[in-house]
Length: 252
Image (cartoon, rainbow, N blue to C red):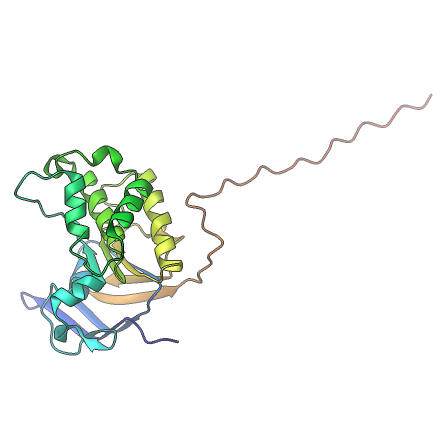
């Protein structure tokens, strides 16, 4: 097996002298989807913040591609790892959704043909109607959808999504699930998702990790199959009724 993309060892995060995260050992492998679930306050968001270098930690507790994440410059790290938080930042000046997407995607200057990537994600995520609108006036759900589009177009090695499905209806969740499935299984991306509704992710998840009071209490792996994903649950075909037998003819 190849080396994990993330190694976590003896990681403890305290706030106000209270442990909010206590992960003794966790390896995260590339080309997989990890679903981190648990109650509110279980440490899900804190773990994602650690992986995006938003929490200060000691040396060598978390490694990315065998390197201590503290030793990697943020400008370099952020080209590999994209984070979608639960709440979105607001631009100060008026900006159309189209310009907002272009500006944010172009910060990932390692991309080949960013215009094509943006065009593809606009088509797949049905964003055309949003393009001329002022980003600041979008609803929370619309902003989240745009941020997810930026993350997908940016084509990073790792996607961290905090609060999967938040503000999104079933149609958008199905579209997003299909796109993530392809990124994981065909592009080799690693997707790490926090949620409290794990059932929505059964088709794309490789590993389910349950947190409780900051500790990992269960890890459940699931075999991946590239052939069993359909985006929506398949309707079961009605059972064929056996042909009715004609009653025997009466003999004279």
